[in-house]
Length: 138
Image (cartoon, rainbow, N blue to C red; front, side, top):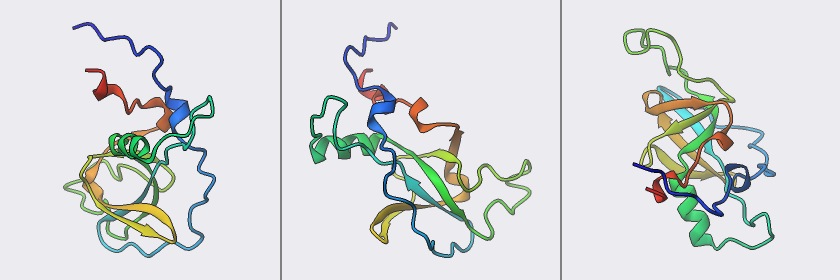
């Protein structure tokens, strides 16, 4: 099947913010098998200066299932039978996870996500390499 042309679709580097809001100085203690992830943020304006409506930003954010690992729980990746090759990720990595995965909450005004260690599906070098609009073109 031929891939349709994206035309003037937004490039990946244009929808991810530069994260001008820093990660919290003090992060909560994460017990057990959990991983604390900060989903990447979506820009408020296009390259041309148009403001994106909240509904569009929410739609893109919903399709974006990548975030930065902030903290890994004390017991995460300790089960050698389940993780024979060691941890799947570490703090500072960008990871992908399922759309309806984890507990979403605000911590000190920042959106965060609490996942189990086995809910990480992929580690990526740079989130700008991913295309959140791919499913919209098929």
